[in-house]
Length: 355
Image (cartoon, rainbow, N blue to C red; front, top):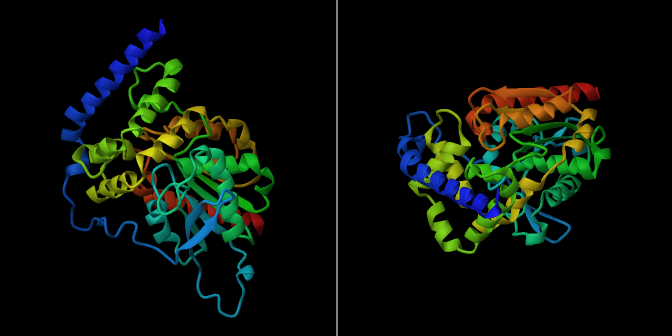
């Protein structure tokens, strides 16, 4: 088939998708439903914080970080605590606030480290050439060196945060089984994403890798138009609801995620977007054979489908696959209890293995 015809099909597919979102999704999705008594409000979600810290990456970018210590340490040094530090790595277009329910559950039980990825949240903007999954892996190593320099750690990554953990395993496999004693890979993949399919399933893969990045790059050249459409509109909340959640969730969850997404400049999204189509790190997964590994995913995840988690689990026979029935990509919010239980089981297994 001639390339021109393929491009025409791609354009038609994107047009159909836009029309469907505008005409149908806005009318039918849950983003506009009212808040119910007892549901957590937007002000409550993401309200847990501690003293802000700065972690300087190798290229000078300063990453915003926070640590929840286990109190009290009076009369003893931190090195006396042999329990692992939990290090949380958030996903694409989010920030450390997305771990609200995990932070709430584990606070006071273990030492917790959170940070915003470069160009996300309260961290500095990165140079475009360093907006890569590989750089995120390097940044994670810097965070470990500066904020958890002693003792074991358990890494918990969601979406692009899971990819950062896999990149760390590629760069420093020697850390796994030594410093890193457990890993939770949540709603993520080691490769094989086809992000252009979010625009339309009519776009063939052989041209989608070109069409998707070009479209996103083109939109990035009109930031005012894009940001106006993204920030707090009924359409943006409906799209967030569609792609973030699989089942019924409180309206505050939708607004909370939509606010994080809108707070990430579209130029940042455009810079990281090409990573997803080119990433292929399944060969790296053998590093996780040295530690307890839990792979968690919602069965209705439209962004990193459950098939990605199943493929990773198939390559790691010792890993535990936890499928959250009906949950979408933001499973860490939608089925927080199941995610927390899985991380707790991982932590227990990691600690017993060290005993």
